[in-house]
Image 1 (cartoon, rainbow, N blue to C red):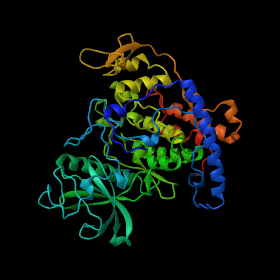
Image 2: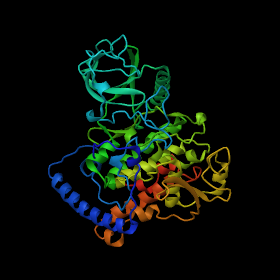
Image 3: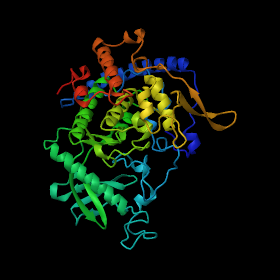
Image 4: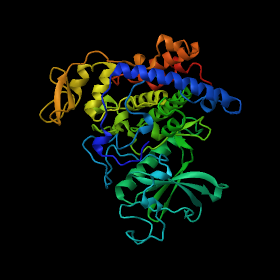
Length: 481
């Protein structure tokens, strides 16, 4: 990825292409890459000796098949691409709907000057010498937290709500943990307190730690900052994609193992009557041996009863249609996000890379066909009215907001979408010629995977597959449990 500074317009400038020609080139490129990856794997098998129940995730994680032509690779994901179309990147006392606090997601190259500041640099800091004007705590390597108990030895990143560091616990034989240091602002403190309450609630419901949700270890205060101690994990799924599946995704066995664990996490959330409300690869952490994952970052999580209508809940690329339409929503929004995430893990490409809510709806219909008229009528942002910015005419035609290259202005025009332009099967199932190079069980697994994704991505939340039914889907019949 380039490190050149880009304007917002540049970030959103997706070039047009001939879809058929692009797909032909993509298929050929992926065939060559599959052969190279398979050869590399065969060589690595001679030296790799993984020892855990999810061996395919460890040794054979690299992608093999994916006929996708999306314009944004998953590894190029950025919150700058995935923010509200009417907002600029900023930091303020009130968090924006699409700003993330992606725990453990940022490497050292992303750290700001503020994070690298030592205690000796006092200009601009408050009296305690450790908090900047925006409320962030300026941690230093080698610093000790909680009366000397935790030694900071790595900076993991920062987000809207906090900075995150990796520490060693002197009271636990230097066991490593991650500590989230909350900004010293009242709104951030209250949000963190809510997250702590939800994490404790989930921990009580999962005493044996089998449901793949991040474990809250304890909390403490340090120089006016609330600190949350979490179990330590290696990397997130976005980083897994960068390392093992850039542009091609990871293989179907690894996807199956990860999908099962994600659904177990959803089952726990549902049991607690909670919505995560920001599931995506960045908020799912993976163990060092790549065999186990944990859902993290419950900063946006809420009880189902708290589901206020807002079109900007959840990061946009993973946002369910009922949110965009202004419909009541529940835990089904997380199932949609998991569907988007699984597609991304397998293909290495973002499924719905819309630049706005309007374009998101268009891309959804291009994949799944038109919305039920009842859903459109019920939605606050369904039918266009004077007091809202609805996405459909009174005759249920989609009002597409597009950039006119001639006038250089945003225009709106009604378009009729009845059938999918290219459904999941067309995107994911290889051609007959491609299948000749695949094993029979791999083809069956892929067909089953497509069926599961199709059910996860039902436009009508009432028809979307439940967590219980998803866990018993044929896609998981061959998994080692």
